[in-house]
Length: 228
Image (cartoon, rainbow, N blue to C red; front, side):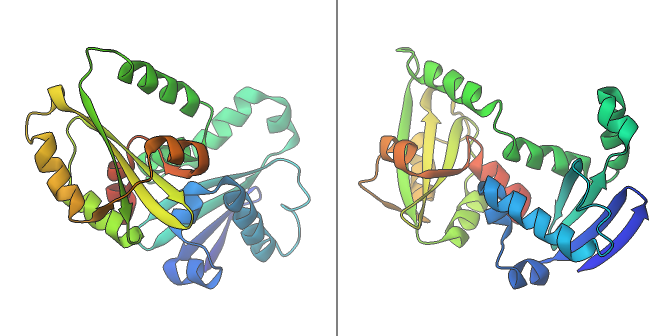
């Protein structure tokens, strides 16, 4: 792990894959478990904040920029003026993000749930339209490596992919909009999918009710983005 004091208010921490492994954390955990994200970030803060200048501050922010070898973490504390002035807060956070902006934005969308329910409602309303022709399929994956291989092999032009964890197993739900698929047929897409996943009696309703949704709507794209 590398640590750099950028200025009085910012610490930059670089964690490689080995550093994450030592702490029993994977990138998949950080993408899918909000409580583990917060606990992990504060544990890193305790390691690098030897003088407790950050830990004793009630306004600490974390910004994460993943890369192929691990992640880069910016830990920032806000001064009194920034706490009182929301405009200054926004400006300060914006100015501190320099590299990998697109990756940061993508990951923040994963970590923020404020708009997720609205997106889900929109999709549900769309699927309830009698004029929409779609196929909804659930496959059980042997492990997350199978998900990575599936994401590399299957490029959906018109569909939704949700990744769930249910009873310690991974499941991929594929919703294929059949009328909108041009480059490949739904059958061809499912032939590819079945090379990496197995038929299961677990339904989308069971996963939605009892499973843990790790990636929502664009699981294949997100997996390619972060793991390939």
